[in-house]
Amino acid sequence: MTTKGNIKEKTKVSGCFRSIEGAKEYLKIMSYVSTAIKHGFTGFDAIRRAVIGNSMSIFAQGL
Image 1: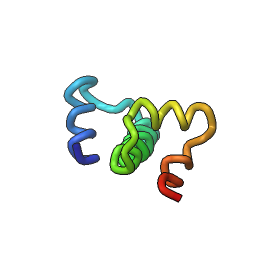
Image 2 (image 1 turned 90 degrees about the vertical axis):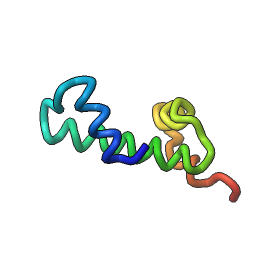
Image 3 (image 1 turned 45 degrees about the vertical axis):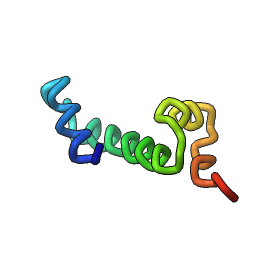
């Protein structure tokens, strides 16, 4: 799903974002997850890596 598609899906579920900052943060997270998926990770694994402080490891795949 594209980022634009993610925004549409998010607004369908919640109706809207509560702030511009919240929308920006949501897009940062979705961009990271989308990149991780393109590198062969699951969304869950990407977020887990980010939470434990190892977010850049998705880019080191294959090095």
